[in-house]
Each structure stands twice: as structure tokens, then as C-alpha cells.
Length: 394
Image 1 (cartoon, one colour):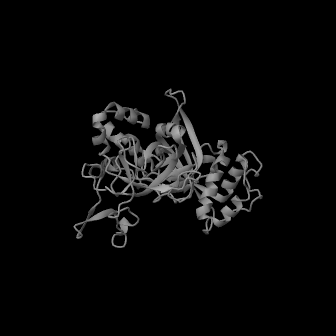
Image 2 (spheres, one colour):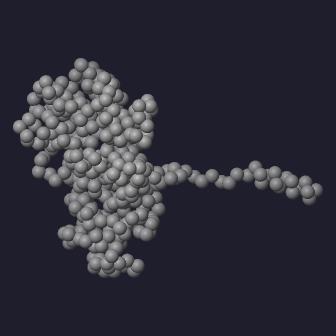
Image 3 (cartoon, helix red, strand yellow):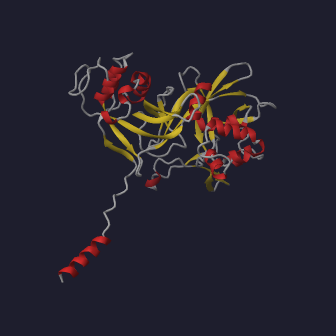
């Protein structure tokens, strides 16, 4: 009987499975020590100070940020050590959680392109940028459907009776020209215009040499589809090959397939003229973006204005297969149609050729650390136990 009981026990143990861990919800993860923030001590945090002050322009009057911003203004030109000390004593770092087994997500870059254009259509300038059309409806379904609160819903009236989705890219770009009369200006290159839609803002050089700025004003509400992914799915490019330069090269090599491929992305952006005296394009937070320090995020997971430590990899400048770490303090000051998820970000890399070069090569996994304002912190100039002094080394 003892042997029989032992066999039964062994059989029961063989069928037992370890309890499954509950799947983690994407979002803000646990607080981590500063020593676990990769590359923090080696960062040039002072370079992010203009982005911090820009955030303070919008959030400086809010309870969480008032004291922080008042003190930040006392340091007009801090050293890296002072900037590190300031951040470490006024914020707490939290690792962003992607929801799976790994907390890594996709990190990309975006830039401000320069296009050639005109306020009058000609044989050369024949690709319009449109202003938001008058028949574009903003539909708020949050009052009736809580899960849709904050969602971007756009539509139009069909015969003044039925609300239907707004025209997609293929329809807008068709010979029917349903948005005729809403042109803001015209540019000379279909491909450059498409990438302007993705970047969200740009500069337009007019025939007389004057440069005007345009920026995102609205969108047709359609889901963004990456044409890079379409090319991968079709076998035209591999996932290792896909980059902005590779996609541009493919488009220029296949002129007869450009229009159908671009129409695979039904999302369509409408533009408005922007002030030219701003230091950079305006992000969703409403402040000028700082090159390599402003980040586009998903605001459902990361509050706009927040400091975010970004860590990813970049190809080596010599175009070898070597990858080098790319880590820096950024501020969440923008959003984007393709930026969805807790660990998904798009770094603003600047304007013109340098900005495009870096943005075109940023496409790798990475991690994000959200810095939350601390409820209690020591006044400026006091030393925290275990922390270096403001004039220390990190």
C-alpha cells in the first residue's frame, strides 16, 4: 500500500504545472535605482536643459512641476554634473513595461525635411498640401463609449444624413480630387510630400528663395500603415534592409509602383503655415522641439512633458555592421500616428540633411525610463545621502 500511495503521489506531481505568471500590463513599471539606468553617469544631461525649460513653458504652473521649474530657471547654463544632480534629486526613474517577456520596444527617429514648393500650381509644382477641409468632422464617442475616450475619430456627412469615415489617401489622391479648393500650397515631388506627411512638419523653399514652415494641423482619422512593412511582407525588402534611405531608393527605382504603394497607407495629414521665428517645429505639447532631445511618445502611457531616458543602438558612422549604444535624456514633447505602445518612441533628430541622415538610420530596439516628479525632494544646494554634490562628478 505504501508503494501504491507513493506511485500515486509521483503521478500527481508529474501532472502538476508551475503557476503561470500573470501577463504584465503595458505602462509605467516599478521604480528603479539610478544605478540601474543604463549609461546615466556618462550622459551629457546639460544638453537636454533647453528641452527641460521648454517643457516648463507649458507645465511650469502645474502642481507637480511648479517648484521644479522655478529651480530649473536658477541654472541658466548648468554643467553635466549639476544637471545630473538636479534630475536625480527631483525625479524618480521608472522602467517602462512593454507587457511581454521583454521590456524592449522600437525606437525610431524623425526630422524636418526641406521641400521645394509654390503657392501657385505649375507644371513643376503639382502635388498639393491640403489644409484641414471644412467637411472634416471631429467625432467624440468618449461620452458613450468609455474605451474610446481620447481616440481620434474623424468622419464626414454623406448626403447630410449619414456619418461615414473620411476619405482615405487613395481617394484624396484620385483624379476626382475631392479636396480641390483646400490647397495650402504645391510641391514638386510626390515622394518628398509623402515623407512630409510622416514627419508631420517641414520647410518649403519657394521659387524666390524664401522658406516657409508648415506643420501638422489635422488628420483624416485613418490608421497609419508603414510602407516599409508592406515592402517586407511583399518580399521587396528584408527587415534588415528597411530604412528611410532604402525605401527612398526602392521608390525611385520603381516609378510605376510608387502611387499604389503610397496608397497602402490610408492615413492622410493636413497642414497649416507656422511661424518662422520659432526655434524648431512645434510638437504636440505646444513647444518648439529640440533636436536629439525631444521625443514623440504614446501619451496614453507617457505624459507629455515628462523626462524620458532613452537607450537604443545606432549603426556605426562608417556603415559597418557594428552597432554602438545611443543613450540620452529626452523630453516627451510630441506624438505621432505610428507611435503606439508603452515602449515605442520617435526621436526628433533635427532639420535638413543631418537630421534625415540620423532619422533614416534609427530603427532598433531599446528601452525607456520615465522620470516622474518626486513629491518630496531636497532644496537646491543640499546634498542627499549617497548622492554627489551639485559640483561633483555625477
